[in-house]
Image 1: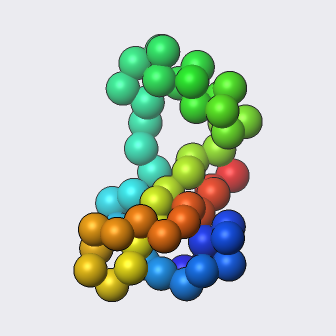
Image 2: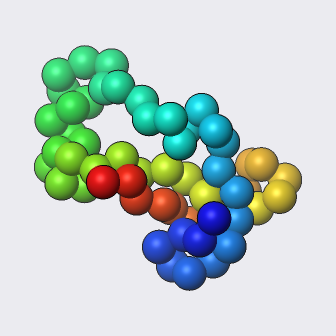
Length: 57
């Protein structure tokens, strides 16, 4: 997968399926910071080092 910074990496399938906000405050924060988009961390092959993010509309 290609992150928004054009780096290639990996994401967890559970993250790609989407996550519902845990509460109204989290939903409001997501809408304010990312326009309602889901932002997924992109990792190196070790699965721990975050190298970017992928945005789902």
